[in-house]
Length: 586
Image 1 (tube, one colour):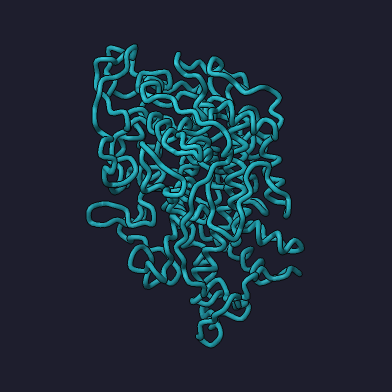
Image 2: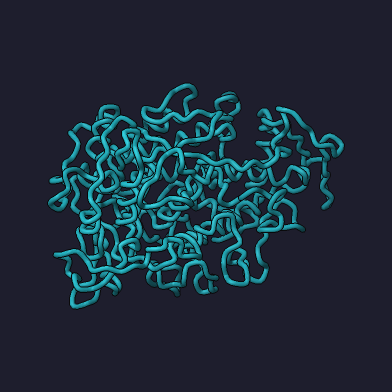
């Protein structure tokens, strides 16, 4: 077993010690100790902890309790604003390609060409798929030196989903016809944890914030291993979509606990009135750094990632494809939201939650229902977490490689999928499987197949010439390869082994399979290919760079004293393994 050395320094042996060490680092940064200028971009007054003692912290009041106004209002006093976004075409002049519904169903139905592990007949289509062979898993090759060569531990599958829920929410999308001007993104598209924080405690103190412990999320003391829930078991959180799997909801819970831990670190050194906003800023900046430095290098091709990271961290340097402005609502490219960032090839069907509980992803519990104690995740099973002194390294589970095949369970998902309500009127309408399918005489529900949903949604968007659909994968690849020097021509339907009738490659299908073709692997790619890497990497990095409140924007204005992560086990780093440690979950 090789060890992911992204957090190579030996961690502290208990949560209290880890948090005290992190508290010292963050206060040094905020207060400007060790000869550094204080990290205080918004004029926030912070009490130096040397002025406190004997359990009696000094609480400073800002401006004698008066609320400042005007354009230079400190971040702690800004009113919460609900910001929404919209969508745009990354390549508006390309021609649409929209394969027919029949072709889509032939490709994306259970038992069809995209089914990785169909039940072997005479088993029924509705039964669980066969076990996924280890050769399809995104395990590291050799000894990892950092995230880029450390494979994709299974937890990152759901961190990726968590990020998706952060930046996009199409509540009014249909599978028939969507126009850019009429389709709203009910997210700001900022990488800002808005799906965790909601509108903040000033507005939603009645919802999921603690009204007694200032600045914190409320966690049910009788069920502190789960997010708060109402009497029906529905989560009381900013985005209930995060409860659609037993893993994603526990990632949401980890972020809530991480925020609460940061609040505890700042108490006594930050006035109560600014406690929440100061903690949130640190949590969001660590999250942004982690997305850019822990998540993206695991899935984005190395040569593409190097260019993306350089553009992200260099003020004034544009990205090659996507450069949203800072001063207007963000328009997300449809080529990203409906194709490139639909990474549904990563999940596997069975997971080990802890040392005693294992099973099928959809069989642990009904979505949007409470966790049981035996379902609490041991995060060593999902991320590479350096061992405590005297303990051995635990090998995590791994995601599936990128490939144009996805697990059988995702081709017949159990409702509800997106919310506690079944909002798609025809999502459970059944029909016969396509001709040639091994389960032909057995009924299924097309819109419960992730593949069919993705491909039909891509077909629904209206272009400026009134045609519908995204560009073909080949046309998108031609544009991207010209800028990223892929070293080969766009792949063809024949290269992808598509069924007869596909004149071109659907862009989502192209993204799933491109990496394996570039790596010349018949078991899937360890990373996305050039086109998928460029679109995914650029959009996510550009969203952070274009955010006026991001750490990248701060650093562009304070190059002599840039912000760096302080909560990692290794200096100036922060990974998911660090987050669950600070949250007290390992």
